[in-house]
Amino acid sequence: MADTLTIRTPGIATVQDLGRVGRSRYGLPAGGAADQHSARVANVLCGNDERAPLLEITAFDFACVPSADILVAVTGAPADVTVEGGVRPQWEPVSVCAGETLRVTGIRRGLRVYLAVLGSFEADYLQGSCAPDTILGFGPALSSGDELVLRAACPPLDHPFSRIPLFRLNAPVPPFPATWTIDVTDGPDRADFGDTGSRLFEAPFTVSPRSNHIGLRLQGDVPRRVTQGEILSRGVPIGAVEAPAGDELLVLHRGRGVTAGYPVLAVVTATGLSALGQVRPGQTIRFRHRTLDQAVTAHRVQRGAVDALRTRVRTAFDALRIRAPDTT
Image 1: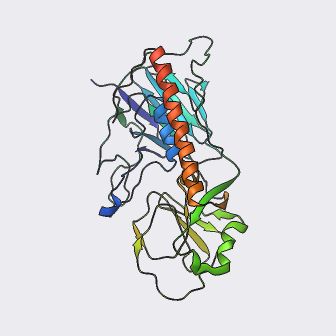
Image 2 (image 1 turned 120 degrees about the vertical axis):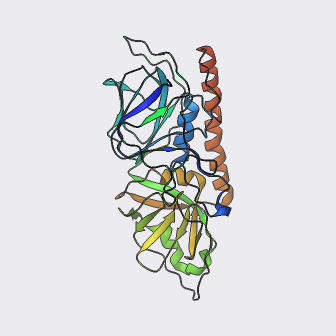
């Protein structure tokens, strides 16, 4: 029989990857990990392809037990990670022996944690991705007793007595501040807001409890459209900052529908989207204006840091004779 990872305390956990790239033309939301950077790093730390399936754990405590020795990495929001009660680090590879309980508790400052396993695990796919789609009812949240079929095992790598970590891979850990700064570029309808458009950058906004993976609702001094006329429904990008009539801004995230008819004041950058995936209801955010060149540069720097980490992981794994199977 195949080795498995058994869910003991599911909290709110789903099987995720980086989403359905290029499927918006067919009307499908992109979906995928809300914090793409943390998800990529988790898989890279396990020697996996960055697009491999992994677990996204949202807000609540989680526990699982493998039937074989495995190597895992836990990234994302700060949390307490333990194996059989012993504290383990985030953002580094961690050994878990067969039958041991891995727990992720006390998620704080951010909203989501990512758990990757060396070799990943089996997952169902829809249009090239295992990411859940709530509209189609694909990829429900995990339940207690669910078993994920592991693709690989890994002998224990940590010292059984001293627990001195074997890895110091210097993963690129983003900040998790009390007030988030989210980078945006100008949206296609920026001119429609006249002088009120500057309100987006002048004061903080509070994230409403009605926010979800489809989009965030923000309360604050909302910019107002000063032009007249209807806006026809059209394609909208992930990260569109919309200003409908009312007292809230909408920021579309990875579960967004592909068309909308609200004016788009700004668009969150690629790096800003990962940060936005960690913002909790009740927290405040400030928007920061960036040019397209600045947004592209920040994205390249972040991706370059992940690529450099991949090289360090490969060197460390080669030295320890850890072989990560193909997870593409």
